[in-house]
Length: 186
Image 1 (cartoon, helix red, strand yellow):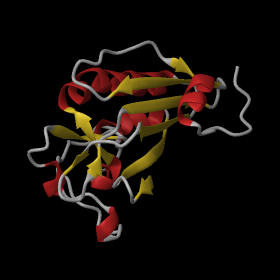
Image 2 (cartoon, one colour):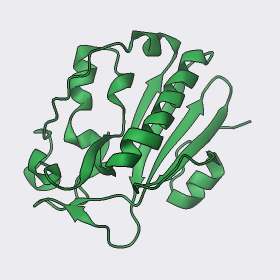
Image 3 (spheres, helix red, strand yellow):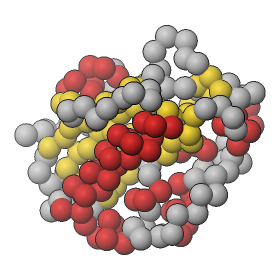
């Protein structure tokens, strides 16, 4: 997790999945969310920030991807969360997460996933700590064996539907971040 103390959310979360890790990701979901005490109090979200906000605590690295009890517990750190539209989180975004897991379970080798928020203008905030609400969420999928990459780009709204994935080049253009420097894609 690369954390942003100004937004009190992750800048992005990177993870590695492969067939074995997906097969091992059968931990019982704990739902024990917590403020991450490793972050300075002034730079972190608190549970109270989300209470009554109208937003879910949206995982960037999904709990369903976690292969161990420790990894599952760590996935519930608020450092791994953004305020996410409840309908979008439980609908289109959950579908994208499931499809990404399914792909990684079929891939010949490692698949790297980078997920994060994008803020436009002066974002809305939730809670006393003013946790920033993303305008968009992205999920970059890079298959290191096939040298292929694509991204999902979703507006953080209740009425958002799953859209066709965008190219890696388009994600770089939209975010201004070169996530895979020096990597040759097919």
